[in-house]
Image (cartoon, rainbow, N blue to C red; front, side, top):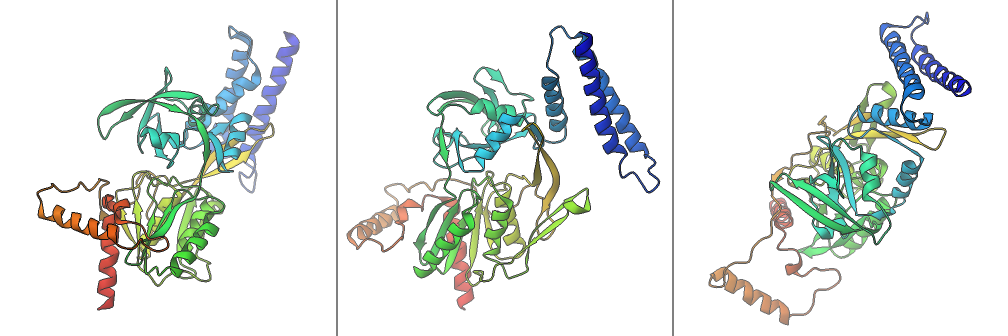
Length: 429
């Protein structure tokens, strides 16, 4: 035991020295520590004392690394729901996520009110098909309660071998229900642009489900193709888009803005964390009216794009208030393959609106609802039936034209189409 204790003491001294030296560095021209840094030194000493007691007297022998990892997890999770410590396995999983292909359920989650919470299910994934919705609070994974579970712990438990199932229990506050789902894991392949086609009367429609490395290139291709097909207005659908890469979100926004227009800016505690992102795109698409669809599953990058276009009055925002995730995470790798994901600043729209915890309010409120067909004895229903019969006997639509029945049950999309038609009608007078 004396040898082990000696090693532990040396380790603790190294930890204290590291924190103390960082606390005391840069304290002023005369290098005198201020009160805050003296307090930090005292707290680091407190941590080292607790660590020594655990190692010496805890009922079971524990590895110093396990205790330190536990302390780091608690320290980061105490800051906000998005800051976290990642062990080497978790950090490796994060890097796999960024490649856009991973095993799991197909949900973006965060921690809200002490519970893992669905930001949005990714379209056409197991979670989407099972019926999970934005803001569903995951209260149990299997038989384990999730209260105060860290984000990393929840992600680990939700993931597993493709083909295996996981049972989750969720609280859906909007419906005051507790629901249970058994979902089979799959390899999640994410395609940034889900749809890109002309709907009707030259109105283009692009559904963007995340912001990845290839999003700007794919968007350029979609816009070029729709322009050749006669696009004279555009609906950009960002519903259930959880975000992704900041650079990609900025590049998407600048496709529709005049050069040098502000896209988003960040503010942190340090001057180096205050950054501005402006449009640098040489040939933006500024000559056609736009509507952007958002809902409570629109978060982070999609809120940046929608908020930017709203502030510059470049697009009408239609839908319901977005999720409200506007923190900048900086991932710092550590020497043993672990990493710290730390909130370093907040996002603000060009007009200074803070996104975090508040979300974006649309210009036109439109709840998500299916447009129900009219009763059979209704005159409008008889007229609609005649129109359907007439359409069925006509030539099929050219190119990527979409049949009306494929989208006219979507109340938010139809509201956006009506808005764009109104703008074009007003502009033509």
